[in-house]
Image (tube, rainbow over all chains, first blue to last red; front, side, top):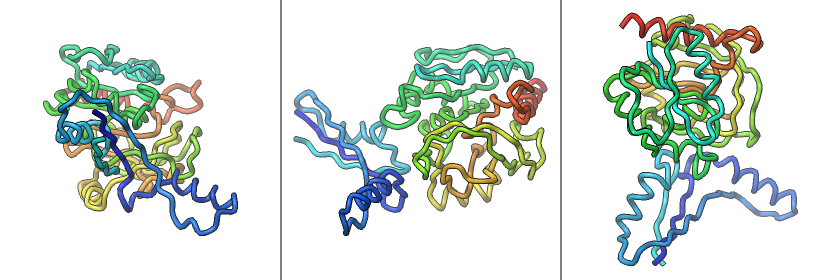
Length: 76
Length: 222
């Protein structure tokens, strides 16, 4: 089984990289990009039967820094 | 006074840190990240600058999970002293020993230069050798030094006089110009600028010397 973890900066935390990407899209002529937030996707190959709670624990302990980041877990 | 300098794969200021501590009179031992215990009788643990584990995942995140960092947390919980500089500051926030987080510089560029560093409080074993309001010249060299914390944490840092240093000109977008902070018991200091790179006239300045001398002096008299 696999789990996909999405890690994003929390709302309200300024994302300098997202801002730079937004600026670059503007200079390429893409109008109307009102905001860009950049995050991470982490794919985990897991032994069958691994619980979502275990993946959540991985997020809390290592994969996300919950001071600045939020995360969501998707089992696939 | 006995000091331990932690060494991770990718640390690159560990020897500079050891030189600065020795010059101030400390006995220094280097400790590898896989060790589960600190040497007996260590008074202060220094977490050096560099790029531990290649800054993978987040700066300091992997180092914070290493066996020696469990020993570091136990040392601090026992009332031990710790100094984290640059990547060391990032490691200390990732372990939760200091609040907040260090994000990518607001200008997105790696910043490497000497900056003006204002001493905000002299009430700690690290900063007692300075006067509040002193402006030091200390090098910075980092890509992720943009200090972020929520309003409640910032208010607490202010109210408890735990902001150790401010930038006189903010190089990285850090909230409230914060360059270094203290733990609640004032025995843990994390800072982005490198005082160990300003301890010898050949460095171009010696403004960092007082930090190490005061720290060693204070702990020798304990």
